[in-house]
Length: 290
Image 1 (cartoon, one colour):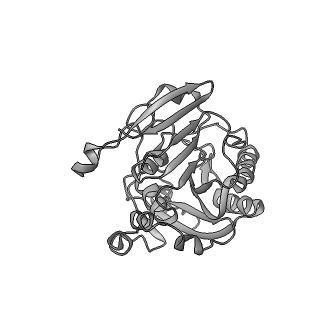
Image 2: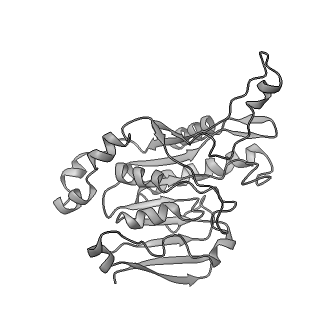
Image 3: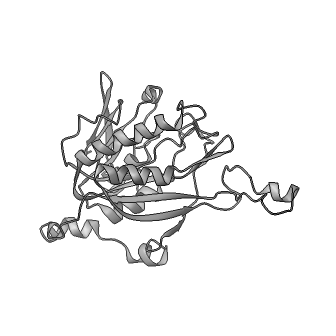
């Protein structure tokens, strides 16, 4: 089955290219508010950041199909000594837009492997009460739902689609997918432009979310596409995708879904490729069957 992948270089607050209620799953990570390592000074103030998220939430409610899921990978931000309640505010804005709050997964990163503000060292210098500030090695995966899912939809799907969408019980139980804490190694920006200044999240996050919340052949959206991780994984898992990106500098880079190498020789023999079609400010990635 061929899939289609479209990238729009434009504002995700007005996703006019996407028809109403045509998205089955959204996975995204908004720019971390003025994060010292990745986005210093990106927003003039916190209110500007919240307006962006508010407007996105409203259009997300339009494009997401009834009963389906939107996932935000984000966390509170420490900027110049002040902590901003991003998780609470994203939750509030999604609820105001009409979504239901479904769940929160804590994504825990390895100790000593992440770029963090090592605030805990203050206690070493001053071993007294009131000097404690913890080092943060987690982020939140916030899960929202547009109304309730009609499970009769599952019974109407072809058996072939259901078989391709089946969740591995090994992954679900043995790899801890069933828990509210996911231990996943993060991505460090050690590569070229695609990873520097974008704060890419690891492929394992969209891999789990796509398998848990969408069926084979459905459509996934990432309104803050960045290096294209969500789209790459969606393509590998037989889902269609949309992505929005406002950084025109990324046009010159080949998005990270150009080719997917498969270990399975039969799939490798029929490997799929992507054709790039430039049209104004849009980059359409048409997924072609070889």
